[in-house]
Image 1 (cartoon, helix red, strand yellow):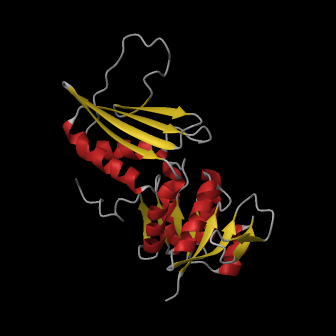
Image 2 (cartoon, rainbow, N blue to C red):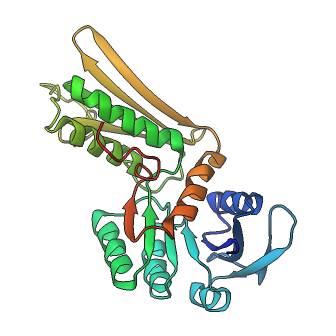
Image 3 (cartoon, rainbow, N blue to C red):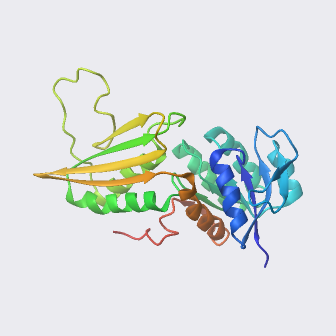
Length: 269
């Protein structure tokens, strides 16, 4: 059995470039094509200098000519939801790291997987440390009644709060089994100061230059606080998770949401 053939959707983006670099370094994987709306040439040199691959704005044409095993997508919600049915109907497995997907989007991806007999790994965050952060927050959630999340990203991030923050909150609530307590103020002199809320968990979003992706979960109890924090300082941190997903997606049927089960963290806490 030869290397797993991969097409990267969003190949000219910063994460897409990292994906191509990671593919070039793994002998079990092979980049066979690239798709990006900004494509202005027919071929894209590989980062390791080993050659070039076809580049196009048209996903359908690349899929038709290159017959990949997996499509890796780091674009935006609209582009992802246009690409997923095209790839699924051609029997191509999916690894999706696009942020801002709605619950309805994720449900639709699952439906398309079942309908076309393909697998998909969709994750709000492919950084292994971020996945562990959410897992550890779920453990801590059973022991504290108050919790808030501060997530910090670069100024170009399109959505707020981040998908990672929402997933972390859901993991905490699932482990706790009931909403958190939330301290209410009597006089909020600036609307929104207490952040958004998911069942008692206040979520605060920062967007500014100088940040990449950071999240801190803060638990409060009598006389103490517990902080669990993850900092992304380079986009290469996503690649071990992406590579793991590419290698595993063809072995699984239907939708896998998050990396937890791939890392053996899916069973209780």
